[in-house]
Amino acid sequence: MSNPTLKIINAILTFQKKVLTWYYDFKYAKYTKQSSSKTYVTAGETLYLNAQEKLDAKEVIENAKSVFKENLDEPEKIFDYIKSQGTPVIKLQKAPTILWFAGQEEGFIPPQKNLKALALTFFINIFSKEKIAIGLQTQGMFVFRDTVLSPYLLAYHLYHWMAYSKNLSGYDERTLKQFKNIFAFEQDIMARKQLSIEEILSLREAIAREVEAIDMVVALAKEVSGAKKASDKLKKDGDISI
Image (cartoon, rainbow, N blue to C red; front, side, top):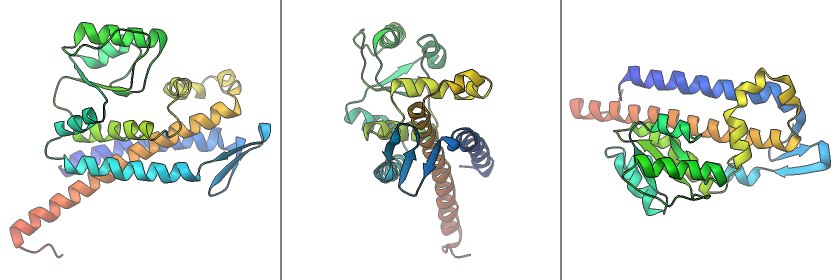
């Protein structure tokens, strides 16, 4: 990966991380009292334990990075790995547009129910060569445009798929819906006030998953870029010392 490309990835993803983190730190942190391993919710005397979740998230990150690195030269093999775990991978021409009509976004789509599932399966069966059962419930799946994809984009969605499969918090239907509208809360004071403490904590977890995915992609881009530089230097000089 070239330095300009790496810089662009870093700039975009770091900006996203800052915005998401800022949103929680300045808007939601006042609702909780945190320690290194627990979050105590003052309303309802709810005790939220997140120590194990942090360990699980770390494990997911390492597993996702491992799969990514093993298949960096042939990113399509990442799809083979995903399929081997029983998760469908659907390719659609003009996927972002088609998924918009189904109320979804390109990438990993958690299980859907009712009208959302019906719309998703309906559009997939119309526009994809791969057919799935039309119904009111779906399993988790990947839906991408039918073209060569950036391996870093795959890594980002790979993390979310693994995190969901690991039962990390932040992927329930209601939280995901609110997360998609998270920046709208900034302008809608009444909507923010109507959020319950539980909803706020769920959003916090969704933000945490997003930040973890972004951090992982940035780290991978740096590691791969650094490894390539070292390899190129070794080929040229026979020595990677500085």
